[in-house]
Length: 321
Image (cartoon, rainbow, N blue to C red; front, side, top):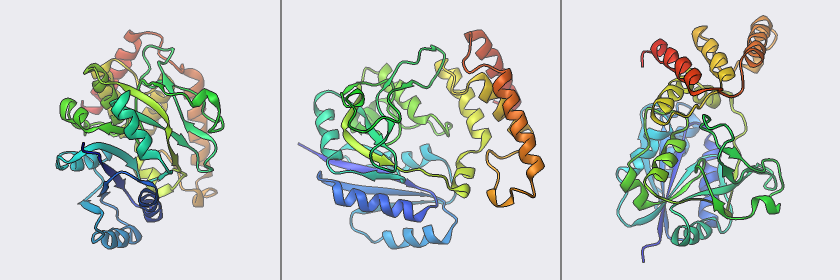
């Protein structure tokens, strides 16, 4: 039986984070594996130097993209050319730290109870839960499921039972045949591409499971240059419109739709540089007041599908979609 696992890692800047991920994969993975590393056009010298060094490593196949096309395009670069010998695919962000036994637990679940799995994700301390089980959101219009147990200790019984999942997100491990059946990631989505893949898999009859024995650390942290690129408001707004049109599920609440819309219309980035705190104090104050107004004036959930549809289609026309 084929048991090889393809480990797809997408890199953008943060060379030390990517190297840490690769070191952890090498030291904990028991199944026969190969790392498929995609660099999404990293501009900084440190990451370029790391990528150059890794290119000759025998367990790595490297893909270089000329600019940052987003996570979907990077993952599809691997999936579209993946050799047929691989039975499973692990979609690891480069800020993942693999823990012992993660791959064996994933393989056991994929051979018995699941076709796509959501691992248990821990905070950087290795003890606190970042993402555990997920269940249907009480609001039927919300794309995000209800995430259970965030902030609990990793050993808490509430987050240590395998169960059905609504979505598989960060660091999903997938049976290869699922991708062959439902297709690749939607490259138009710069956020929630994993939600979309999950919804398509469920619609095709595949089983999504939360598997706590497959445990990983997700140490994202905050890096201004990285998160500024990742957090472009237009990407969030476009993804919201496209996701709503496909699934009638809202990625953004009325409050965040108003806030991100204001940022986009005023050409404001999602984050401001901390080293210019005093020079742009007036700008920070204005943003803080606008955000507070958006959060108090608009609801956290959509009351009706009609309201969500009207607001989303108005946004779509504004964005030219």
